[in-house]
Image (cartoon, rainbow, N blue to C red):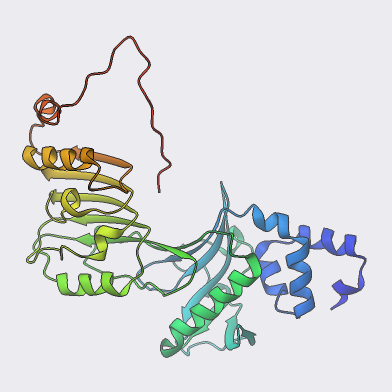
Amino acid sequence: MRLLKYPYLVQREILENMEYPDLFMLSFVSKNTKKLIKSTQMNRFKMISSIKYDTDRTDQPYVYIAHENSNDQIMRIVEDKETKKDDFQLSISGKTINFRLQEDDRNSRLELPERFFSPYPVITYKQCDKESVIKSIHDYLLDFFGTSVKYLWQAQDFKDTDFYIPFVSQLQNVSFCIDLWLGWNFEEMARLENFFALSPILKSIQMYARTTSQPFNPKSKFYQAESVEIDQYQHTVPDILGRFQGRQAFIRCAECKRSALIEFMNRWKSGEEFQNLEYLKIEIFGGEVLQNQILNAIEAKQLDATKQPPTHNVPKV
């Protein structure tokens, strides 16, 4: 590799001006090249907001580096349909991985021309090897970019569709964020609970829920999610006010009994339950909310209007 023949300052300047997809591919040239990139780009890597696996209904992740105002696509991982020939193979984390550079594999979901992105590789897998390929790629990213970077797996944007359980890979140092759509007369609770049982604790869940033929399991791992944002018809489906164990809950519901709100607030105030909960927002769009009756029932104290009220700010998960 001729890059290694240049003086160190020249090497660093060249690498500083390369895009992330190019740095990623260049790192496979040799161990020395990978080591050089890691040493010269250490400060640059520290500026990375997060590395995200973004999946849709195809369960074929787009992997990109997230910055404050932009994203750098570094690869896409797709199933090999055997309709196209792979361009080359590389050994990644001890596993032989197939690569393609065909442009039409890249932005098919985004429906954008190739000029909107820097070129990036497409990694292919056989269905039986899906988990092992993704794990090998992730292990390589952990080693290359470091464990201090946030890694997110996003299975989102499933709204206004039939019920769909997203694919969630079992990866280390990854936070998982998912969308779920539960329409009227939802009848697949067993599948849903099995998904929660087999998944790691989720960082965030966005859910649309109406009515179900069976209740949520009171011990469901759904209630352990760090953050829940839900549009529900009844406050008991699922029972966030009764069983949530996470940090933040954003609830929009049509039916919510006043007695349930009062009971929840008293349990929260006692400090004996909901000890992790730091923020709760409830919006009720079907029926009257008698705010003063609720405040009186929980013996809320009135603040002195002449004094500055206390503030409590928490970042949204």
